[in-house]
Length: 632
Image (tube, rainbow, N blue to C red):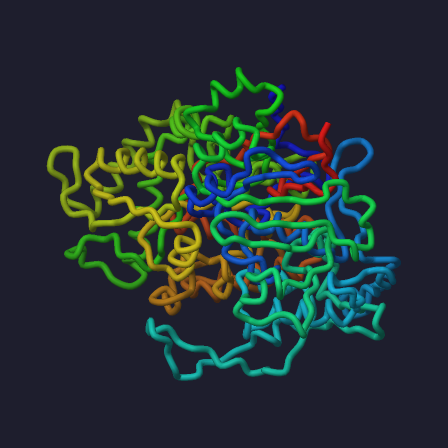
């Protein structure tokens, strides 16, 4: 039967990942590939002992440090084994358990730092038979955190002592091909405070006690890789012949844009728990193609469904159609360096940015989020009025963080604007009133809004949402062209800031609001808005006051680094729970004030799973797990 898991998940399971950040489908994650190739490659029927699934299109990479998408993360988690992992408990819930850890010791130091000493299992091996050592983790974590690699998720290691020194920089006086300053890192030999005292002992020192530390270690970026295997461009991870891993499976084939083949790893320490001998991850971004292969019996699990088929599938396949809870937000992001003021506005500097903020927030009010949910997404999503998603608890664990967003404003609604149907007319009137301050109108339409382009990755639901937003904007005279790109190209375009406005999505990486907030620091590889970059780098337009929480910082008209980066660093260092959560609310207040984040809805996860498959589970971070599956 159809199952709708409540987004309010108790205890440590109150979250869901864009785990990794973004995903190709309209539920959360992103991807793209050649659907024709995927269809041609599909077998006539599933072979005995092989499970055929389709999550998304060709992943950008299967290098644990470089991956930043949920679909890629799912494949990686079947190929590697780290220190901790998500596992299904006896009562059917999910829990973090030790994976490569045989024993552990925690020491709280006098300076406020915390040191963990881990003894590794002695039966962990790489797929080529070599032993996994503590030194492999030391190398992998320093690599993933390094400026040299500049991985999107490097900032996930900033809780470890030494990270700040690794990234300390000064202006080199040089610029890159786009005219951006090239930093000079002043401590090129700096390393994380991670040490292998011998082959089986790993010692790591954190800046402070981190409540989500074990969840961090279960994230793909924290998985081990071997120094003699990897390279920094990810080429090693694109070829089965050079792909050395240590998890439940090995990669035995990758026909690019078609299928990735995994086979049970006989060197895996827990190989007896792996019940499915082989997994075939077929690659497609075409939800109609996915459904056809599922209905033909060629694929036993698909992670996306055509939106126009949802109602019918609920009736025809009630025991195979699933609608699960996820902790994530589907949103639209604006490039903060994109000019949206008319050429003759006469505004400049801080005054101009204040106007842009007001405009972006006003334009957000033109969107009918419930219409998108009811007519396009159709997965029981909830209209979003904040960026930190529903499902993550606040300091008081009986409350959710999003319920207290912007609470000090004293509004009758939850969040940063009223996303209810009842507020639509008032929202529209308010938006038009604001827009009239900055643009010329003829009748009820703007005549001088600069041309903008909406970027989305190839997917029918993303396209339909884009077309709706295009129509909503056109009602007030904002002309917006649509451009779609293949998944990997789309990710790179958005990351580089080569866009005006783009679709986006984020799933929690772990059970803490900071997983939605630290991605927007200047140096984050997931900072698609380009905060603190380009023209925005020197703009002193942001203010934040922390004095009510006992801090000295009260910054008026500071840069993004002075304000937002600063408050994120305070959050990472704060051990008082109430203060820490109050700081995170202040960070989201500043983030949302820019208008660069336009929340649309809080995710749910729609997928199809054959009723012949048993033992499958997923977590609300978006990861799917197949190693314990069997055929009924």
